[in-house]
Image (cartoon, rainbow, N blue to C red; front, side, top):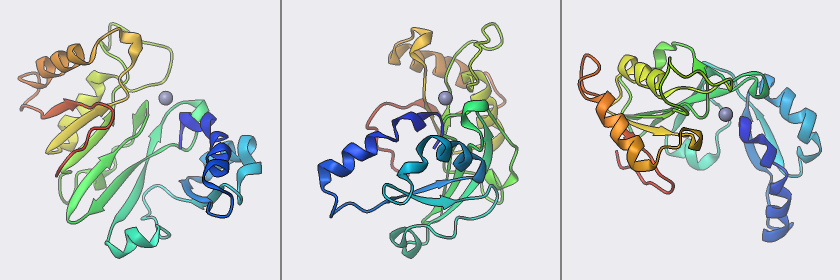
Length: 206
Ligand SMILES: [Zn+2]
């Protein structure tokens, strides 16, 4: 949970819609630092709407829902940075059915956590890439650029990368983003990178 926090109140409407009797508090996994921010604004939702779970970067989440545990899914958070409004933000290393998925969420920067690419390289990287043309353009808001996202992709070496969170501020259409990604991803780095521009509702098979 990061900068999209402001929609948390909508969960009250969701509970009303499905009926109080049927509703169970939703497990929410966040770091202590993030909970400090969340509790300041939405402490009144804890217990009734939010089932508060605390997670720690580098430590496998021990209280995942039963359905995930029985499938042998393992999730390890890693530290990300996303400015003052999203303190305690993390990305996730997800291991499921011998596949490794890295999900950064919305971020400005992250740590070089070796678990991301060792012992096995990721099968899939889902990475925030909010804006375009670094270093010529430097927006004030703390978000990952497309150029830096590809640097991480080169270092972490996933089989496939899907870029998310492209900004409308660039004024680029989905097709233009695809063109730019292709242009950069092929021949720009030491090896070609399989980078894709995601779209709403996309389903990815591994
Ligand atoms: Zn953001």
